[in-house]
Image 1 (tube, rainbow, N blue to C red):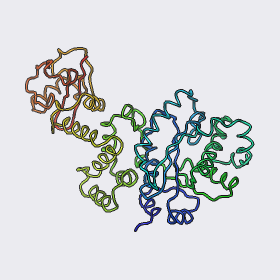
Image 2: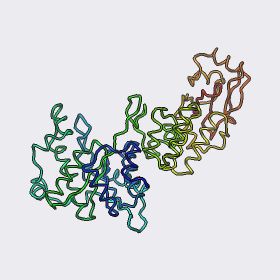
Image 3: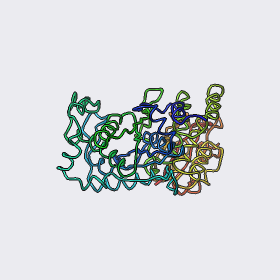
Image 4: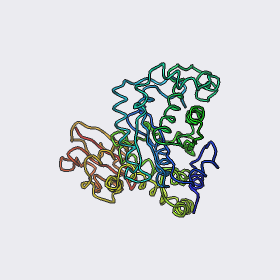
Length: 421
């Protein structure tokens, strides 16, 4: 049987551990309690957070007890890690709302069924809100040598640039205190996070050693990067969010479906629960039949199901097929169709009346009206997947999908839309 940490190494997940041998021994001796924290710095988690969340899920599937911590307190402060400027502080009401939304997202990935590996969900505001400044300084702050705090990369980088407020400077103490509290309350002996959290996590390891005389563990996963050098989880419009109101399930599916051949095998290891044998086969398919995009399809289907559910996957797959003439556009629900059209070139008109040629040009699918007419003459022009043969055809209300949309296609793969109203 493959050792659990060896499995994480094979998946190219592991960045750092405080003591791999000691952690391996602790994992082998029986279930341990492990936590990961997620700050509400936005109304949703994004694809980058998903990597850490899935590490926590893997620990639970291996029989360990996970704790998902949502930073109701630390979200009010702001983590300086990975930032060159001071984070804007959000109001308590905004942070509280985001905490509620993120709790729901974290819950989806963990099992709370009664048993030795049952998950817990906590907010660090529970133990931080009542902590006075004097208590914080005397009971927690005294264990933090300032010279070591200044040496941490997240701090030193900021001090070399625009500087750092005392508020963000104190963040590492608050996160360390979270680990101490979870050790005391739940017997938690492992914290996991992204590699940019290494300094904050090891601060907690050191605090527990100083205060309780106990040896606990730290584990970080690699920050995901893409082969083309662009930042992982970003699109032209911003982050790839887990909240369907911020990134539609269709856009989420398309993001993974369009993964670079150089990235897809690693993404399958990091973001899916497929076996080594399955991933090896998909990696082989990329090398031998790249145009089929079999690995990308598996990645997109697994992740869309994991984040949005099987029913949503069925909708977006149907939309993807229908847009390219392999299904009925009329059978798509309005929300899915609208989400799909948001990802392609689209023209907005106040009312019907323009010819198909005009709409094809306005949507940007062709560079000129003459090119649009040529597409019609050559038999490569479609309206809602129906071939258009009349250059002067004017779409009517009967053509509108859900009373608002037209889908245009030139050839097999070039698609666009029109929204009326």
